[in-house]
Each structure stands twice: as structure tokens, then as C-alpha cells.
Amino acid sequence: MYDLIIIGAGPAGITAAIYAARRKVKFLIIGMDVGGQVNWSSDVDNYPGIRDSTGIELTKKFYDHLNDYNIKIKQEEIIDVNKKGKIILVKTHKNVYETKTVIIASGKKPKKLEIKGEEEFLGRGVSYCATCDAPFYENKTVAVIGGGNSALEASLHLSKYAKKIYLMDINDKLGGEAYLKNKVLDEKKIIYINNMKLKEILGDKIVKELVYEREGVKKLKIDGIFIEIGLVSRSEFIKIVKKNKWGEIMIFRSTLSNEENLTSIPGIFAGGDVTDIPAKQIVVAAGEGCKAALAAFDYINKWK
Image (cartoon, rainbow, N blue to C red; front, side):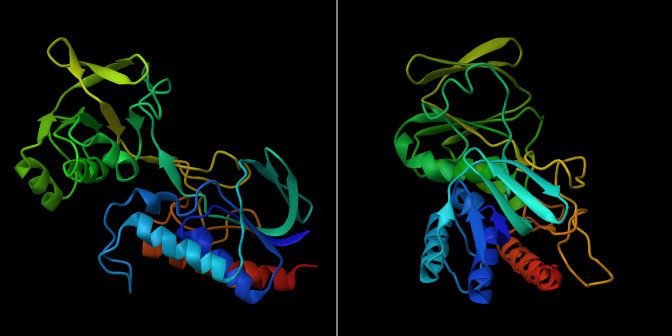
């Protein structure tokens, strides 16, 4: 049986794992992608001590830090987290693990359009990560779907590669931060289309056209489509903890033991973007991972 299982390998999960290795508890970290959402960030300029970096570069530093402690990440999909007596059962598509405590740091995942062709062309012209896939669209025409900060950032990043970017928004005007909006509107490669409704993605082996409705049904010839309409919490695998209306895991503070990052179930802690903490930032997630780990160690010490 493990003392601790950490679910997720983003900033919160990696921080918790480093603390667990230093504390020499018996632990396991399970995650499908090292770095999590950090990999989607084109520029990272506000992480202390790391200047003029990209998300991928910062993830490499995280990975190197894990290697310093010989921490291996099990790449297994979590199916269920439940509790039997005092023991917590973590079920993956391969195994069932027993543990005294769990830290859920699984982050968020992209929202889907839920239109025809989205699943069919995933990886063949449909992408949820401009930072990852922009270089594949050198001198090509792409569409970015969304109107908030993530869509604005994706459009600006793609403008370094693509010859033309259609920024497509269901709203009548752009959301997001003012400085990003100004940059987007000043960029000649970016064409803003508002008040539209997506209908279908068409192609053969790869994406060829995007069908949308705006004063009638129209077709747009494109080479790729980047979906940037927001994120949802990766919390569907655990049903026993309290969540808010957005699926974020609610965290509490125990006044008796002063444990932070506690969920509604004793022994199950949470940290990072999967929780209801308002600030969704890399440095905040790392701090929350640290807090969750320290709380879990306190719980382990009292576990009988």
C-alpha cells in the first residue's frame, strides 16, 4: 500500500511529487502528460527565476527536476477514485492501487465544439494546442475558434507561422484582456469574424473546409482549426468529493488539524486548476501542490 498517490503531472502534481520524494514517503505519481497545461503556453514570463521562457521549456525544467529524484511517472488513465474504510482505491485502466492519501492535481482539459468532424479530424487538422502545433502550419491558412484570452493568444502565436488566421467568435465583440485585443486587431494576418455559428468541419484525409452560419451558411477554405473555447476540470473520474457547478473540486480547511487543500472526503486532497481556487496560474498551481503535499504528510503521520 502507498502512503500517497498523486494524480496529475502538471505544476501542482510535480511539486507534490518532489516534496514527497524529499520526505521519503512511499508514493506514486500518475499522469498522462508531463507539464499539463504548461505545454500550451507560448510565453512564460511571470514564473519566479524563469525569464523569457516558453511552456515547453519550463516543462523540460520540471521533468529534469523529477529526474534528479529518480521520480517515474506512471502513464495510466484514471477511471475511478473511491474509499473503502480508511483505504483509498485508485483505479486505472490497468491496475487498482491502495493508498492512505490522494492528491488530485489533474488540471483542466479543452472544451469541445461538439460538431460533426471534430473527432474525425483530431490530429489531422483539428488541434486544441496552438503552442504545440503552430509550426506545422507555416504559410498556411487556419481558423481559431473562440473570443477570450486563450483564443487571442493562440491567434497571435499562429501569426508567427501561418499566412492567414481567421479568428471566429460566436459573440459580437472580442473578450479577453485589452492589451491582447489591441495586438490582435493590429495584426494584419488576423481576420476577425464575429456573430457566427459553427456547423461542420469538412475534409478528406485532412481538414479542408469549415462550415459556419453568418447571414446564411458559408464555407471557409482552411488547412487547420484551433479550438480555444475554454477549459473544463479533469475531475470526472472521482464522484465522491464535492464539486461546484463547473466541476471544480471544492477544497476546505480543517479547523481541527489545520490541514489545507482538503476535499470533502478525509484523506483526499486537491491542488491546482482542478480545484475551485480562483487564480489559474502556473505559480499558484505549484504552490497549491506544495500545500496539498504538506497537508497529506500531516494526515499520513496521524493515519492508523
